[in-house]
Image 1 (cartoon, rainbow, N blue to C red):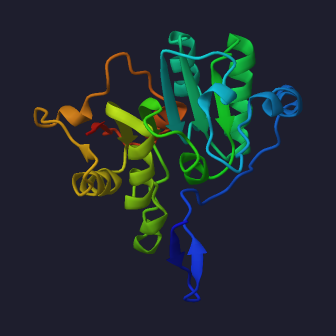
Image 2 (tube, one colour):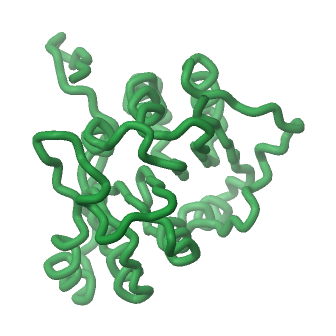
Length: 236
């Protein structure tokens, strides 16, 4: 397992998630779903690699994964509009998990499974060439330079993501932070397993067809961050 030095000069397990896990108390319905629904759809890491046939009740024509689904708006909509596909959502923040559980119950989304810990641990267990696409939407930008190593887009996570994606699969990244957009482009362009297709200038400011703004994106607009970046990277 990849290691990185910590502030004491010792080896520490590389992680993909840093940050808070809890905020406001869940409302009663979400608390109920945490106890009743989450255990049934939560992925627990086995000693060996994960087989998707053991994760989902039925096989699907396509499989997708979203890293850090936030409030779950995008993940729920994708699962609702593509019921012949299966989806894995990764999110350690309890508030976001609660919202996603409500959407799963309300829309009867039996094609969604959740992983509630560090996404990198899950990526390492998922099957090679098992996924048709991946989403990373408005990740924590970790703006301070000393925290850049905490950003999800890095050589370690990209290598694991490339392994689980099929050739030609799309990795979508959205951010409203220009520095994170530049960082992501630099990391991708230096990685042998991905490429950025040639696109018209400034087209990366246009959202994908059928895009609906997430709760975070709407909040950013109200706070004056009007410009977002929408990248589509392709697995070689």
